[in-house]
Length: 121
Image 1 (cartoon, one colour):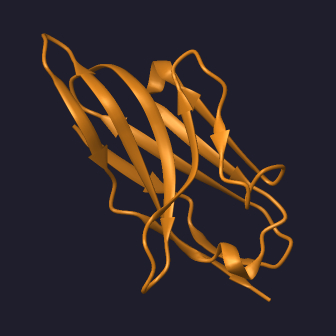
Image 2 (image 1 turned 135 degrees about the vertical axis):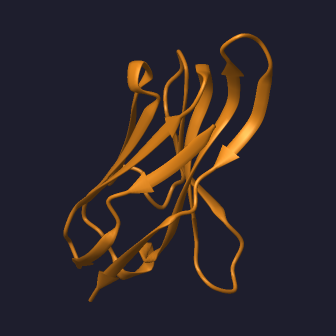
């Protein structure tokens, strides 16, 4: 199973960006898909998560600005980011949690390599 993020880049203050996270492999179902971010010298922090059949959860710093969604048929999650601020600059990581595999078995979590988002002031 592999998780790949895309959509990062450079955007101006107040701009928007949409990140994608595609999970591939012999996947039957993914319980939770989440976005984390990390800046140098700091711990990775949860940005948003969406669990199958439940409402999304957001960090307070991104509420009302970011929207997480998922397409279960495509094993893909998205993070629509609006009203971006310089403090949103970070490497954004996607994680698939509770991955149930076709044919049996499961993986607790699979992380992507991250995509860099830079917000200029």
